Amino acid sequence: MEKEFMTVSIPTSLYKKIEEIIKGTEVTSVASYISKVLREKLSQEKEAGEVFSKEDEEKVKERLKALGYID
Amino acid sequence: MIPPHGGKLVERVLKGAQREEALERVKCLPALEIDEELISDVENIATGVFSPLEGFMGRPDFRNVLREMRLSNDLPWTIPIVLDASGQEARKFKEGEEVALTNAGGRPVAILHLEEKYEYDKEDLAESVFLTRDKAHPGVAKVAGMKDVLLAGPVDLLEVSPTPFDRYKLSPKETRILFKEKGWKTVVGFQTRNTPHIGHEYVQKTALTFTDGIFVNPVIGRKKKGDFKDEVILASYDELIRNYYLKERAVMAILQMEMRYAGPREAIFHAIIRKNFGCTHIIIGRDHAGVGSYYSPYAAQDIFEDFPDLGIAPLFFKSFYYCKRCQSVVNEKICPHPPSEQIQFSGTKIRDMLVKGEIPPAELIRPEVARVIMAFKDPFVE
Image (cartoon, rainbow over all chains, first blue to last red; front, top):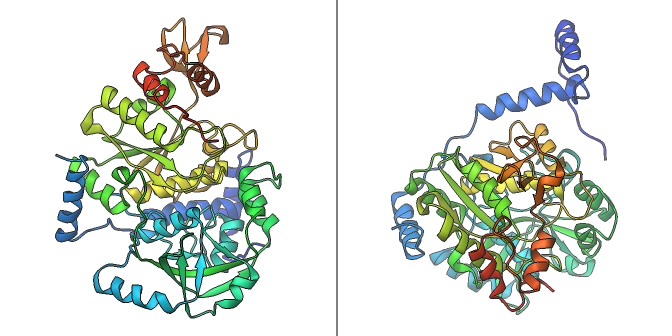
């Protein structure tokens, strides 16, 4: 199966800089490097924590107590 | 608290009036019987263990998981979660309609909102996930036996099936509230399918030194011949935790799911699942989720390089062993002595001694744990 890609342009100087950085590393291409950096960056910018309702929490705590997980 | 994978904990267990209405409706739906492993998958979807999946994968996610190890929205995901049916079965079901998923006894366990039916290449699936087409690999053998059509769409669970281990069964919502109640901000998950020896204990306690709590999470479900039975694993961990862990620092609950033995890909999958349970870290040891010699010993650690956006931190460990010169449990990073000084935590050796009725040396396994295992007449899967 073939991969699907979109084209994004970056300055040639930046491209060359990345080429230098990845030389001799396990990263096989400039595109892989950019994907990796972007994914890392994007993962830091999303997702808030899960919030449960008071009622839900109380119900769960009762079960956890009954099972001996909390006192 | 760490966010679930994809940001939202999925909850598709029907309750109250909705459930009553669904139980009536399901009587008139065309039915598909599914096995225990698929029932576990349905439950894991519906209770949020597999968040953000709301159901069985459609073709875009399936293809992307095989090719990219990501869902079609780019979120890391390495194992296809699919529902197979024969061509004859699939013809009975129409896209856009509902299907009753029943257990072997004919009891409806869930409703599938069928969105898509599609064919797939079994060899491609096996090779992508297991990195081999060798049918001696248990995962490849399972794929070879799958039916020809995949059914996709969200599922609603009618009820969680009872198991002999319900006392240990917690949903991600419950573990998240439990960790919060315990005041744990950092939690390390430990995946296991074995009884614990001293090497496991050292790995866990080393990780626990840097986190607030440890979540021991044995996989319960179909295993291969020669593995410890589920009840033996749970009893032995209960004994270890009771005698050698601080109650306020360790929690054990089961993960009901079949082992795929997909090595590196499964390590990522296991990490995602523990993230959903609320773990901030996961222990990845040597040959995690491997079988035979299909994967290099640390492939399951190397693969994390490709997932900087996973959202759970892996803690990598080398194998621990007992060093006679150091007189302690060590690993190759901290012990300078030659192999002649090492006693390996060989599962096979420990198993052989237990079978013969001998308690292995205390350097290998806690005597209390050994006695619990030996109390079972037949502790291994046949």
